[in-house]
Length: 293
Length: 158
Image (cartoon, rainbow over all chains, first blue to last red; front, side, top):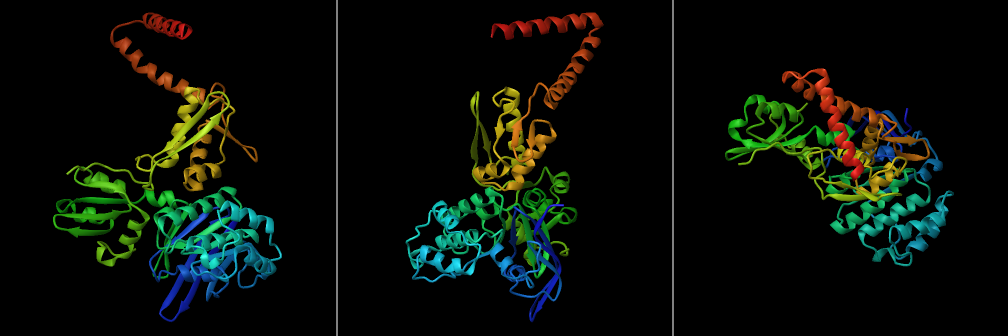
């Protein structure tokens, strides 16, 4: 039985106007889980439960084997939280930031911090206010790794980053994953380059988990279907998650590409679907051909 | 309109080249195409196999760790892990705990079995054809022997 970095069983959390229902999710140590879904899907609530910032109404939550609501500072040092807002003082530089952060964590290593800054290409003498958003994100990552975080949770880490910064952040993340000591969970609206690093994808919608499986499996069992309207008979429609009809033709998403191919393979085209396609066709109700399961 | 079955199971980004440096032959390269219809784990698997068959990848050569390969190819760890698992199942590589993965010896391992299987399977339709032409066991054997000697001579000349 592999050791789990995250284990959520049947978690429920109800707020006025939103509820997370029966969420079960797990992540093996050393792997990367991408949490995707539209706004209001429950991604942030899930992260709050994992970080011990909210208490589940029911269900069981284990982070690195411990209950995040009951564990003390020891668990906090093993967790890193990297999110959109900068939590550092803008007038300090990275070196000065390390000086006060180190007092919060008994496990802090100056040596690790120094080599992370170098590895991530960050200037230790530059004021935080002068860093770009992507550099601040990398600084948060470097801090988390320097207090020995074994699980790093990132909320929208690439939100508002330009493609070059995203690519640089991705390099840093690939380097961390290659070391094999850290597990990563990130939530995102889906950015193409981040989805490359994810081993597993959990897709949430309306407070529920739609699926959680290996990324390669998710992509292998979905395909985009395009063809003339004459090919869109009820039998084909039954194999589609959703479809968009336009003058003379349609585009749809299937989760049974083989069924679609054997039914209408000569009249339609099948192409790989991106996670974004999978999300859009699952979420947009005006595209739905059959009742959502 | 051109309707053809397209690829899926890929992440639709640019292709990527990776080199495994070997002691004897310099380097073998792994080229990953995100546009190919073949899943990425299978692209890795097939290229490592081809390098083993051709002798470019010498038995005992250490392969990069699954995490290093994932970092360099910028693909997920689970994908490179799958490729190595398939290679190991086929007997093409050997993974030693805490030491790494190594190219297997094709003469002593499943690789030879596999090639023998392919040889046998290729021989059957030839034998059927010989029988259909009314050739006896001995005639077919003599023909096979002649072909073998020819291949041997060619190999020695080269």
